[in-house]
Image (cartoon, rainbow, N blue to C red):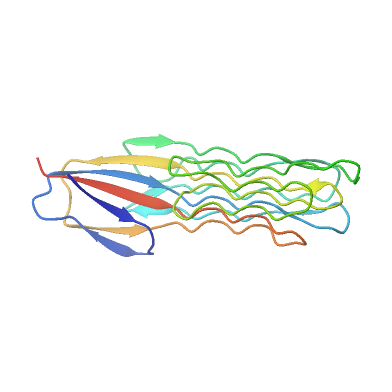
Length: 207
């Protein structure tokens, strides 16, 4: 078999090579962004959601951005992508990002939530003490890491995109595809990490 890695594009065209008998398509939606942390008061700024990856009419749902919060308590990580549209051979829900916390005191440093790893790569690391959240790698569909600041306010990590597998036994000549962008990290004194963009990997079988 031959392969194609589709790493970017919106409404782009995939062309099935001549003599290909069947296709396997592996895809993931964009990951969610990590939460940003403010150095003024107890504030976590939410990360934004990723965007779906699409092959023909099949969507891989994106990961959600980490939650925001303005009071003492736990900060939820972003939910994993789930239940994308279209009939797929196999779907696996994405994983949620790690939790953050607002303690409202500078007595202890608190580790921010990590962006969760996906089928295609690792997530962005959450910050400890004062720092920005780590970005997830491009084309991983993983979540961005949460930021932390000096008032012990730590953001949650972003969720991963949904994983989708397609088995296409009588492929068409062309398909339209879109690679979902990752969500942005929450913008604050310390910014959250960006989610990784999505990815589509095609294996082309000739017999």
